[in-house]
Length: 437
Ligand SMILES: Cc1cc2nc3c(=O)[nH]c(=O)nc-3n(C[C@H](O)[C@H](O)[C@H](O)COP(=O)(O)OP(=O)(O)OC[C@H]3O[C@@H](n4cnc5c(N)ncnc54)[C@H](O)[C@@H]3O)c2cc1C
Image (cartoon, rainbow, N blue to C red; front, side, top):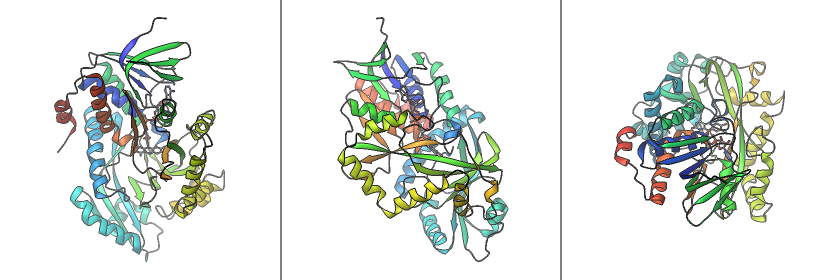
């Protein structure tokens, strides 16, 4: 068999894998890279523009972030901002954005938060009902005048088409002088560790690589388990769905976030591919599949779970907490066909009080799955990223928060891979391009 050998193989062509390809090809002396994807193109799963909320998260309107987390996220998001601003308007749109506080308690919390966060985000300002009415009339229209309202507001909101961004990373990488192969329709069945390299198997073909980066989202954990890594980790797959209505909002309106939940608060915002539509969501359902609309992936979920006592007890421990079971219960109701939207209406009316149930259309074929990592030792959902670094192999399961940190995540992985291979990462040139501070 004629087997090709690469210095680095990347499995998965979502925004995680493609950003790694981009950084490897542009900022290192690694000569040969292969990007392997099971579908026929890039970004067909979570990174597709239809399947996520398209927000570039900076930490300013994410009210569950601590100042430290916000500073880290801002640094990472700035890298994506710099990239998309340089590479073209087809990758993003700018909208204003806000975290909306409704009622006395939320307004008090947001006002306190603003004292700290305005120092990190000087353009973030606290606005009241009057200004809000001018910026987002539908947020105020029909609302009880006695209910207190405030918002942490900025003009600097970015909606990114992460699918297009993934395509752009690949296009830019292919412009480099490196030997780059992109293999679509190639589902890796197994990864076998040899003395000095890895063998990646797809049907009857094999690919040889000195180092491997697995950027296959939930499937990364499956590969990690098979190679003996991360055995204490399991996944809680949380599907995120959306409801769509003709345009009601001019920008992104996020609600205040529960501090103990890792999932984004429900928000309303314009679709990056069609700003005449407003999407509300995501509603979150725990379902036993690793990939939405791919029912065969329930088998992969069960394989990860393996009905171990510790796995079962971890899920029970998590789901028995009131904050989780209430969240799961209500989100389950929102997802019931035909009537679910009327339960959801109560939630969305916190953003647009005059919204009618009949206006909400379930977004068919959109939304994705977020693989939330659960540690069976602590019996807790991990609130941050999940990455496992092994011997010349890295597994990316859940970069956090999602696609917004792809370039920062790529920087970390590329630095590590260069260490594995004895190659050079041009940190100075990378920093000059992407770091603002
Ligand atoms: C509802 C929802 C809303 C979200 N909103 C936001 C948001 O507003 N902002 C944000 O930053 N993030 C958001 N996220 C998260 C973000 O979408 C993801 O973090 C990001 O897209 C993950 O990218 P990825 O490349 O790791 O995974 P994916 O895009 O899923 O890519 C993984 C790739 O690996 C491939 N693959 C899997 N197994 C194999 C195999 N065996 N062989 C070959 N290829 C394989 C898959 O086909 C896929 O293409 C959201 C997610 C969801 C679900």
